[in-house]
Length: 114
Image (cartoon, rainbow, N blue to C red):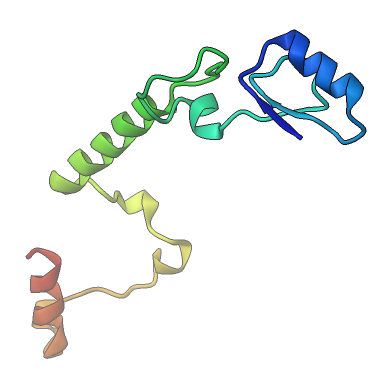
């Protein structure tokens, strides 16, 4: 049985009286199990949360900062650095050389900088 937002004493009375397990959502420590929505637990949203919610992190702020930094790197052509190439692309000797005579090379090169 799920008990949500009830006083601890109600959670305890229900847990003691019922033969089925009780799952508490802000129903006190006496329930057989606990649920805390991970969005609330991790602080992924700014919304007003119930008083029984305990936040363990502020990942929304960190997520916004990380995505903003990534977007800035992409816009400034700082993503990706040579050391971040996949292993199979490192030292392969493959180069896009517009002077190679390959008709596909100018198209690929111009597409990279469009």
